[in-house]
Length: 264
Image (cartoon, rainbow, N blue to C red; front, side, top):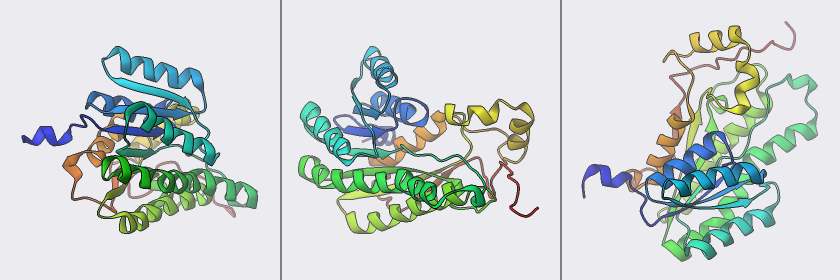
């Protein structure tokens, strides 16, 4: 087998959450281009239908299923639909998540807990639901968690989001130990990437300029940067890799979105 063939996903089936736009949609398109059948989950029907239609127009296979990751019965339905439609499940991408930065002193305990559940609890739930079905239908597989550089480098304003993503990265390592050797579990520590979620921040040219200046690679990330890594982690090319957190963040060693400290 040639080296490039190791990056193919022919015959594989992938479930991707938060795949109506941004990083999730880019992962779905990348997986489909590499030969996988993809199941696209997100809350907004119009968005997932659009992504699925684009994949089908390019000759790929895609199923769109409205999914609220905060409801476990819908995660179960997502896995069931993948197996019912395509006969197996090989790959799960836990991409849904996100919490806006903000002052810790103005964050309620309930908001903190909700962020943890959204960013970590949902990934745990889908992994727990999917793993036995992956082994049952495909003999094993790969889980890719979309984490963040904020989970590695502490910064003012990121107590909620950073803690949640840090926990997701640790969960990745824990599940990698528990699910080996059948299922590989890895994560991507994403840096500032051009998505709709970041569009409000990037609408201020001076903030964007500062973020670029603070990024060693001299630019912000594109969703394709993340999707390329996600493809590697899901493919046979990464068959000896598990429990790792890959930084796709332009070389950041500190966050590039400065926020005010609590007490000046």
